[in-house]
Length: 311
Ligand SMILES: [Zn+2]
Image 1 (cartoon, rainbow, N blue to C red):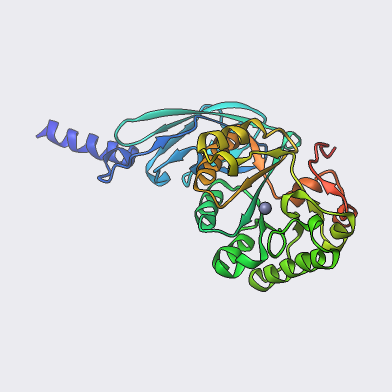
Image 2 (cartoon, rainbow, N blue to C red):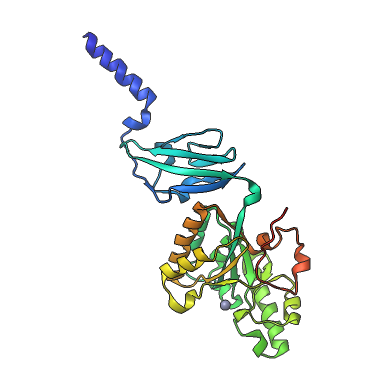
């Protein structure tokens, strides 16, 4: 009798202390990336590190609560500069470790990923992914295609991505009549605004070719690129990923095309690896103005990269 009541007491105590251990619906999870760099004062969502996780059912413990502490809903708080280990475990007794490095905000490593020639059929899939990774990008849209994917274009704006004018019909602007080229720029911007509800805030001429007059007529900064992945040429997801990873130095503007399935896969692989390393994907305008530049001063120039960090 006595031992029975003791075991009831012990079981009850265990249930109260470790409810996650006894719960029926044990949840599988997978640590995809076991290291992450976050910024002091930041809240970083762990979705990009752990897949298939229901965070409420995981046990998350930190080795140093002055550096970073996980929350129940799967966020990491960057509390102080340093390093710590987050131990992840579930009801099945599976355990993993994630190494967390918290660095100063002044060390933010920024990259602008730019996706040309959309909108296309992969835009929604990409945005679901970007949303879960807190990644912002720039979509350079072709005016004549925006009405085919109105929901995608509206979501680009709602999700905080930047939309750029990639002309109306993707013609090489330096190879057609001057008046026609200006029309291509103007019509592209109008078509995008009609669907997006806002005007494009950057311009990218097809093939990168433009005259100064065209760049000024665009009325917004002309953003080119300094890393060309050539994704359209070889259509290989692993190579796209490598080109992005190798080209992701601070301040770089990376060019891919959102219309290829292989590019979508390559972008996902590369973004996950780079986010874990602390790389921040930001819009072209965020990158180009981080040194304090005014947008109005950037109009007319050919902009490739902005390496200077804001002091
Ligand atoms: Zn293009």
